[in-house]
Amino acid sequence: MTKKMKSIQYWGPGDIRLEEVSIKPLNEGEVLVKVEAALTCGTDVKTYRRGHPILIKQVPSGFGHEFAGIVAQLGKNVEGFEIGDRVVAANSAPCGECFFCRKEEYNLCENLHLLNGAYAEYITVPARIVQKNLLKLPENLSFDKAAFCEPLANVVHGVERTEIKPGQTVGIIGIGPIGLMFAKLAKLKGAKVIAAGRNPLKLKLADEFAQADEVIDLTKYPNPEKIFLSFTEEQKGLDVAVECVGLPSIWERMFSLVRPGGTVHFFGGCKSGSTVTFDTTRMHYNDIKMISVFHHTPKYFRQALDLIASGQVPVEKLITGTIGLADVPEALEKHIAGDAIKFLIKP
Image 1: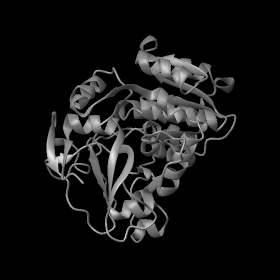
Image 2: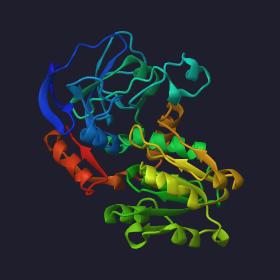
Image 3: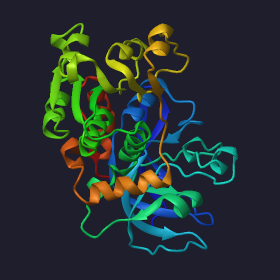
Image 4: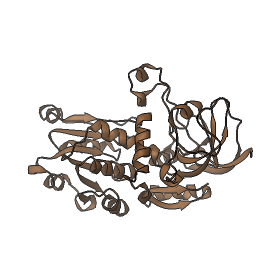
């Protein structure tokens, strides 16, 4: 087993480097995975631009968290896995013991350590993730598709908690990979889906991947409320409006899109310290529900794998291109420029 590997190391905002680093000996319960496929992610792009107090606790640090690969080495007392197994891992696992875990709110676990380091030839999966969120792949499922399990798990969680029902009209504002997957799952729930964005690449995928019933190019509608309402029953407004951008100004406008009794889901996380102002009269007397869902749980990670393996969510359509580790900095810049959905990284 080689003791060195190539790895993208995060040194600070705008500063990531392809370096040769040591592969540390495995602790008890850990598994070393040879990365066969990794994906760029919006969270990684944000971290690249401005840092991240939770994901990056020290520098240099490994980078990237969406991946699938082959078990290359086992730590002591690992059960249920063998060298050569094809696997996908989540980027976290709940402790099962804290206040929130005891209430089965596993995404809020107080000891939720996030795994980074997928932009590399190998990644060490911590013991807790091995026990709870390392899954074997079905024989017919490619590594490329399996790497989508982590982002899709977040969306599965969001859709389930929003309680989308057949026949509802659901609007998705912001159609990056997360918004596109949210639109696709809403369609699978039997909803009428209206997807809105500005980027031509993403608008095209809203039609071809998400199969949205209506696709709105927001560059043509500076005040899109009217066009949204025109697609709803009796022009009353959306049953569910989902914000997948993460901008306070858009959070505030979501209430104008939903009908009385409707639901607003703030799925896009805003920059730390952001604040918003809402019309309390409209919220209260129109009986508008608000929800915001964070992260995933082992349950939703497994559901995501099933959705991908069954072909219900054709995630491969979201791949912009295939690159090597040396191309990651350029790929992240393309994300910033709006020229990418997901890059597939082959270490």
